[in-house]
Image 1 (cartoon, rainbow, N blue to C red):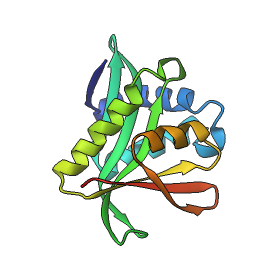
Image 2 (cartoon, rainbow, N blue to C red):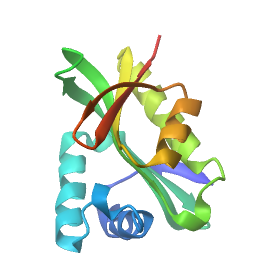
Image 3 (spheres, one colour):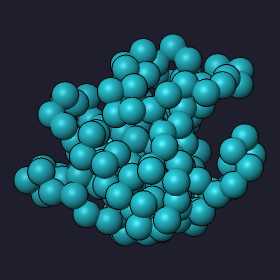
Length: 153
């Protein structure tokens, strides 16, 4: 597996990964390709340096969109936000998601941030368990979203 920073030219492949990766979890995602495309464009505008992708034999199999400029209203300061993590179903449970999260946490530390934050769908048990294993803790809820954080100290 190879990790690298994503570039805007990768958006078409990221769109395919996004749409395939959310099959069965559509209530937490954009399902129309044009909406998903707009979302990916927003992620690149938020922090172009914080988007990482994973490749296997030249194929994009997952990506993570992090944001080192995110002001968390709940924390009252800038934190490292993980906006999106998607791995193709057939590539899950191979350490790809973990490697992407670790890359984002390293990026946040390099930016001297002391906390990471993400939101996960309240019924997405696999994601909850995954993030808990990586040291994230549940903090609060909003509608069907749960905020999780991790100290970077």
